[in-house]
Amino acid sequence: MDRLEVIFMPRYTDDDKIHIARDYIFPRELVNIGLDPKSVQFDEEVWKKVIKPFGYEVDIRNLDRTVNGILRKVTRRIIEGTPQPVKIDLTNLEQFLPHW
Image (cartoon, rainbow, N blue to C red; front, side):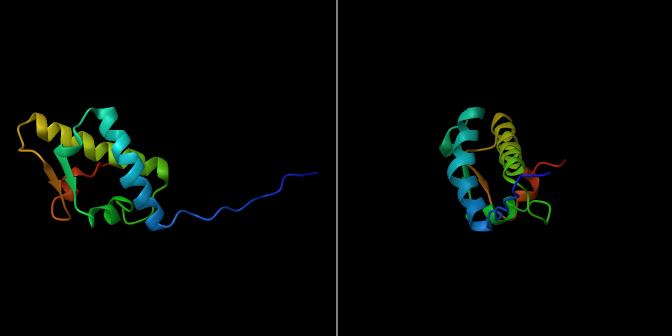
C-alpha cells in the first residue's frame, strides 16, 4: 500500500533561472572565488545562453557549476594579465563556458 502522494512541481522558467543565476549564484560565486565584482561584466543577453549552455535546459545545480566554471576561467585570464574588467558577451562566451 503506497500512501505517498506524488506532488508535481512546475519547472523553473527561463526568467526564473536568469534571476537566480544573476542575482544569487553569480554574487555568491564571486565571493567564493575571491573576485572583485567590478572585475567581470556580463552582457544581459549572455544570461539566456548561460541557462542553456548545451542547447537544452539545465537544472539549478548545473547552472551553479556553469557560472562557477565561467568565473574560474575569468580568474585565470585576470591572473594571465587580461585587462579588467573582463567583458563576457555573446561573441566570446564560448571561450568561457565550461566543457564537460
